[in-house]
Length: 506
Image (spheres, rainbow, N blue to C red):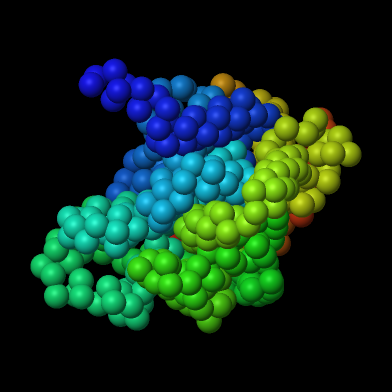
């Protein structure tokens, strides 16, 4: 009996899907050591050193995961990205398991898992640490638990759903859009019967308990994150980042080759009798889609909703293939695997950090995903600041500050600066503003990422003392336009007054 159980564990669906997930984690771990820390990672790394129950830009879970990685691996690019890789590996496993619970056999499970794995969102957010990486995982976990609830009618799954929602809200507030989808789906399907169960409130209580520490933090900080989100949303609309939301769903949120599969998933959930039982999943996609469309969200915000559609599509596809002749079914399977393989290789080539830096391949990849350039030039920035510091008189170095324009620059100085004896960077952006300007306040500042006009208005004297470059000649989009480095002396007003007006978001 034990031998049968052991054999089943080694050869069953979970073992196969676990192998697929492990391969995904290994792929990311092997490729994640290229280039350098991303601008957003530098901000997260800085927050990880200042653990709190909340931050201006996001809830606390991602910095906490970063802090654990720092403890386990130290300052390591691969180490700091390891949990993001694990999160994407778990997404593949959960997608396959969701397919199984929907009725899909081994082939359907593997197709769904691979379809998710070759998506640009999954590939990219397994390659650097971001709250979006974990947000992706929690959406898929909620969907899996909903499937288990619909399949079994066991009310205890509502506690699991509530816990996963709470973890999502401790990662990214966009989880509220999935909650709207769950609520809308319950009201619009026979799942309305769940409203009469006390277990519903147990699930809601689980979500509240998990997210309560962050709610308290927001109360203590006057809900500053909502001020941040309002500002960022206005900026995105002003910059046109919300344009083309619907069209971009077909190529940004999942691999373009899998569009027929997730469309089949929608068809299965809304039009096929076998899918009626799980129609709640369809509304969990449609309601957030409409909500983001009305609210003018960015296209990739809906990416975590696609794995459940791909799972449903794989189930429908498997049923359709079984209706074909043996020869036709074999042909369809071969074409499917070849298309997925080729699409995956193409997506990986421009999404994973594998291209030789600043090669023609790298420039194409960077142009397509727009992020690789933000991983270049940070150490050179700190080296430039350090050279300026050592050129100053010793007495001026004693009251020197590094005034950084954004989280990336501040994070870079705080990561690499101690090796050069640099003080902690201060910045008015996001959570850096809450940490203040130090005691005693600086008398002289080296300003990076700041506009000359702003500095001239606030300091008695400012001089251009350096310019940010890097050995690869790559233009870092986060630094672009702010490459000049200034040395400024004598703030025109007391530091407390200046700091009150210095808060900004980005």
